[in-house]
Image (cartoon, rainbow, N blue to C red; front, side, top):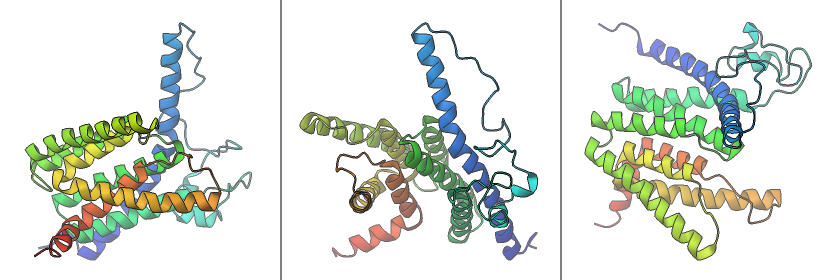
Length: 283
């Protein structure tokens, strides 16, 4: 006998993932600030400078969310995912400052992807691990787009979660996951070092190596070429379009992490189908 009808299970998943998306917005905004504050304190310590006085603690939970311009606290009724944005018409209730459309977008894309994962993988342990994959890659993508930074805390969390998933044989076996993670990091590191020696240019950051290693822990070495090819192709196309439309110089750095995450997302849902379709071309 079913404890809950599947329809209501999907409704609950959608509502819960909306709340997760709301938390991801907080994470995306605050984690880079927390890291910069930490790095500043470390630099001051190395230079024997007095530590910067902290007026208030700042973390993911404190202080309460507020308008960045007028500092008005976010009321409970204005903190409902998507609905609050619509009721406020995208503006602060006190100073009328425009609220970024990214906030409801992150909430909605989190809910839709989680809901699709529930349908694609059914309500199984595989779905639970997939949720972690989706939520972490969404946060990584947004932070890298904003700051050209992939926090180690997120990429390592994705790596460890992939190794745990592989210990249950969900996408690959644990031994393959470990060697794939090590090999993928070393491969990108070596490739970028050779690229730098040949051109004098830095083509990729260290955060991208760690993110690629995390995908190795999730999918094993057999799907890493697909992720690298997809991310490179998508990145090249979008990068060219972006530079043309914005009229920026060709040397403008563009974060690669979002394209890796998008390729990882495609691989998560359709990697096996893509590889089978490709192999079918060569009977």
